[in-house]
Amino acid sequence: MSEQEPIIKVERLIKRFGEQTVLNGIDLEVYPGETMVIMGGSGCGKSTLLRIMIGSIKPTAGKVMVLGENLAELNERLLDELRKRIGILFQSGALFNSMTVGENVALPLREHTKLHPDVIDLQVTIKLNQVSLLQARDKMPAQISGGMKKRAGLARALAMDPQILFYDEPSAGLDPVTSSQIDELIIKLSKGLGVTSVVVTHEMDSAFRIADRICMLNRGKVLKVGKREEFEALRDAENGQGFSEDELLMRQFLRGDAEGPISSEEDKGGFFQELGIFSLR
Image 1 (tube, rainbow, N blue to C red):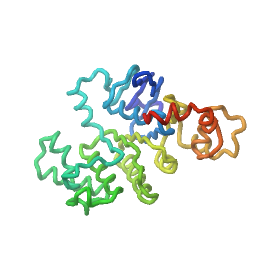
Image 2: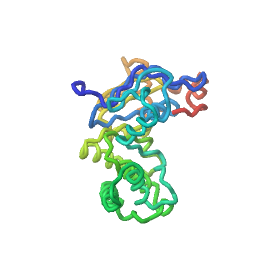
Image 3: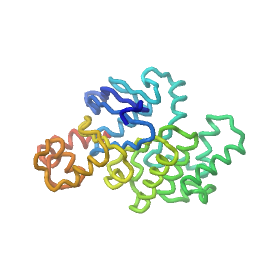
Image 4: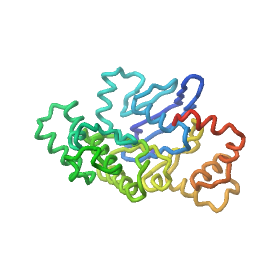
């Protein structure tokens, strides 16, 4: 990984909303073709980090490079051009209810290209087939399940053949089988098409299925960035003897244990005030 140039580079990133510091000195590099999972508890700053990386909100300080471009130096026109090279799967799928599944997938191509309608129609067929949803092409979003909506949203995110795909809680609200199917799609796209994936999630099973590397946040700071195997070793350790405070916190989160450093913070009364009430992820 270190021999490659990062496709995304975040340096000393700070984001404040009023007096609330949500991200505090984030450093992160994402390399071409890898799946980077960003995880952490509710309110740790992970979704805010994702929104900054796609250019939807601006940082208070620091630098974010995406595909060689410094986001802070791009005006809206140039930012729109950059966004044509990335795809985003929103938590809900974010489909337009007045359009069929096929029309939703076709929309980016109609808006941002001059392709002939027949070519767009072929592209829609290809993208829906990639996510195993061709049979739902003419259905309305209200006529399909939550998992199918996620797949339709993914097909739309793929419409412009992006270099980077961002996923915001792709498994949220799905049953275990459907969640596994979405995970398999993410793996297939990353390994089969060479797409770089950045996945925000708090679902442990999903994270360990899809991740090449993991970035764990807590209170707006990076606790650890490492290979999936490093986090698996933390999770599977029989006890926390010799672990640092950060390692103990990560171990509790990864295992879902009721007792540990996170619980101690809650008992002090400041945990929910800092991480829960503001709901800034």
